[in-house]
Length: 339
Ligand code: TXA
Ligand code: MG
Image: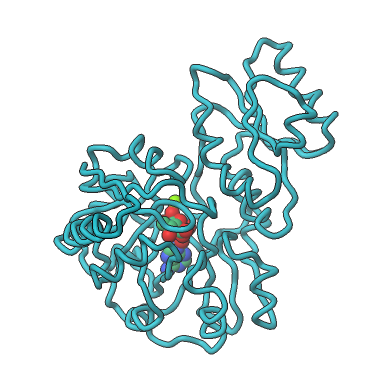
């Protein structure tokens, strides 16, 4: 695996982008930063290139990939018709952490869409992703650049840990930013339907379109999710994770019990709650929900079997980006303890 390091020197970076774009154009895989998480890219029009992504990640074949493009014009080249509300959403949020599921016109390979008649398309808002997509001038299929089942990568180091030796290249552009993946929206119906909460919040969407629906499967385990990827175990740390809702005293008493029973417990919490819990080891995820989103996957990856037997994480507010945070934590958790 070739690892390129983005620098402060634009002429060096230009060469890196050209080389990485060449690797993509010739049918190999390159991991690169986006504003959400690192993606593992391959030519979305080539079934053979896309197969390398599934192989490297160990990804189930029935889970479709998102096609990444640099501009709205390029998006339009992959889909049949774009409803009016999609124009509004693109205007408001693209480039950005939002993915539009639209009827495919067949440009993307069958394994990108996992045989569905729709394709998910996203215009990422990260200078490196933008430059790379412009340089290679092909749609780039890119799931998160982690081994299937593990937390998504928010640093190049995370990608290296999971995929070194399994992919052709990695563009190292430092930490990503938003920290949780894009919001996936089904745009094949009269109104947009959120299939996966993410970087653009429901509240933000509602400011732009009259009504926003939410896939019922997000609130109810019995329903089959419309985004195939949402049914899999995901984001799992090395050790069991308990998510605990409620007061600091409630969380503290649960941690206390486990420590008494002989378990080595690691804590994930906001800075404020972490200070009040006062448990060692603790990874503080930040002051507010934005910071928690940015630090969550790194926190989940940092606790290793050699250090702890159990991770206990506080439950967060489900407002704004909190929806995406709690969606990921519920999936990652082996146990959810209510108040
Ligand atoms: O922020 C992101 O979206 C990142 C970066 C790299 O762009 N990508 C990402 O990709 O999270 P991935 O493959 O880890 O998640 C894609 C999600 C899955 O839940 C998948 O099932 C859903 O989007 N999806 C993709 N195409 C779809 C389609 N045609 N219909 C329904 N769901 C789709
Ligand atoms: Mg993923």
